[in-house]
Length: 503
Image (cartoon, rainbow, N blue to C red; front, side):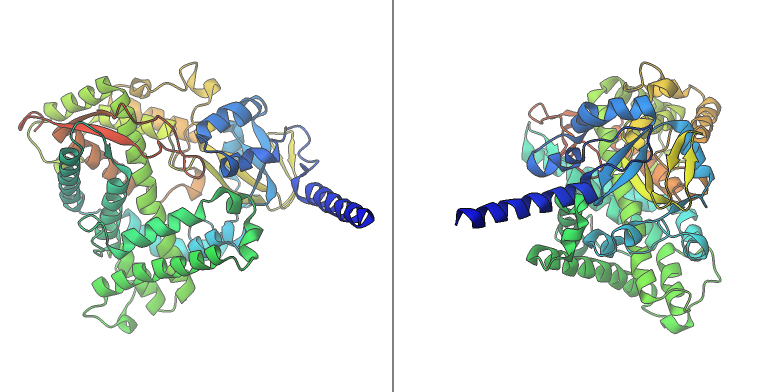
């Protein structure tokens, strides 16, 4: 019996050693950058943490000192970049640092099944095909009145929630998610899914269910576990399928109610994005999977990222009442105009405020979706072997003290300038230098920037006009443990302004 137990122990030790050697031991190359211990990415699995603390304690110093590090993520070692000059190289050379998303990196995972092959992760002719359909629909001039009407509805829901909470705080994330879903589906996709007016709308329930599954740390770090017939993961795949089909059902109900799909064409670039996607499928330009994958990623990026930006913006405004008041005064100075009209006005403080919020809290804090097509030399001395995945840490780069000075971690909208001309000049310069990458960079920069900025502008105008707000004193100031980095379960106390105080 003792001999048997000894054999079992030795076999287990050999197995652990083999797993460490082949999967967890940092690769030899690049040689001149450090490796973050593999267990750092697993901390959220074992402990409830604030990921900004994890970054500060384990990643910040080596990443900023060396400009890049080796980090374990997605069951493999990757190169994670911080230094702005490195990012300029990566964004410039699309053929060398080619896009390679989850459908290539971890094709068997639930996350890959959710997002699939899409306009963000594809490359070459496939990407051009996707972009030809999506870009005109995403960058068309949207009806700002749709956003304003939804913003009025959001304020009503916040007011009702505050009345129920008394002197306590209101949880804003769920309401902002429903609001951003309504904005994107109605103003961009051209369909109505009743996300804002019905908390139990199918799209709300399905989205919440999907988000609970795809960002679980253990499956993010070891996606091969998704190969196992685990009951929870099989259920997650079914939920993903239901989510995608609910999006498609909404589009078909709105755009093909009176027009047969087989007669569709892509001749009109002014069509809403949802119709253009359905037309691409009907004309044979896309197959069914391409439609569902691109519809899903457009929805996720088009409503999730602005939602996270709005959460972080409200958090910063609540922490800095002087900024809230400065924005209110700028709104008042423009006269009694609607939020829709004001969103199109020249409002330099609002613009600088949004840029600063996005600098401190980029919706995607870390992104690893590129691969070295050939052996590359980054910055003249970091040798990256062919096939190595390369990504960047937006949260770190946007706070680089070399680029932004000793106040890099401070909230200061004034750093952008005072006039619209100075602010935009500063913005273009920072992006060109790779110092501000919230919308990424190069020819693969975010296609939805125009819509996101318009939505955030309209929303902040409406909210600051109707309310003053502070952090709930009982709310614990912590960021999310993994995935997108933003204030976790943010609660605010809203005080209604006197009628006519801002308009």
